[in-house]
Image (cartoon, rainbow, N blue to C red; front, top):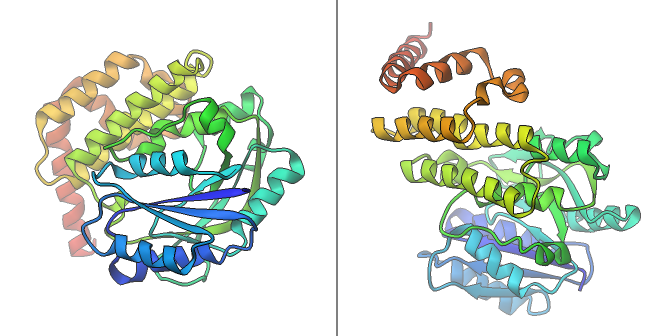
Length: 342
């Protein structure tokens, strides 16, 4: 079999989201493929929808139900275990793709001898094939046989896994199983999925539609999700140690960890969690300082981090109390200016 498309599903029955995703999958122009939809213990009608598709498309659609909620990582792992395709693709169950996305990605890989291929995506808030805001998921310079320079670039700017295809043999060879029971599982494994490949090809076209709505992970901030992002950062480093590339790409991984574990978590926590806790912010800074004490001197950090963020981070590193007080005053001031239209 040529391709296995793995779809983790959790409570996507409302507003036709799941059907729109699945309809785009059953209409793929690639030949000889299967769709493996894994229901992650949904509490709405998602499982019934998947069963209906399995009955309508028995030649290409297989549905499985998990008795325990294991998050997307657990659902993806179950899909990988059952996959029969030479290639594997992942898709979020509230997104959709062009009819020829997988045919074109596999064609590009076979034409060039690549074992990894990807494309761009677009952001959209409506169920249609109208191209929204295009997001360049990778760079032309990253394509080709993966030497050290390209691998460093992929660690820094690897892009999303859902717009790529991977050889199943590579996933099994390196035991690339996703962490379960946490969000941000892709962040934990993304580097290994990319740089353990040998050849990457890139189609600079938006073939994937990334649906923007309030229930999506990126728009839902809680202390639990912030904790999961931190854990994903820790797992990212463990993965690098397990596959023996931590020392080789330490500078890039230091910056990636700083961004994932500390910078993104710190500012999303402060902006999105209603009742912030001193101990959470304090421990975040302490662990960051313990793992990479000189992270503020990292060349990528110096180049890519904004001046205001650097100022706030220096403040938090000196005093969590001062940082939290200053941040809340700054946030209140900006909200007031916005309300007054100043």
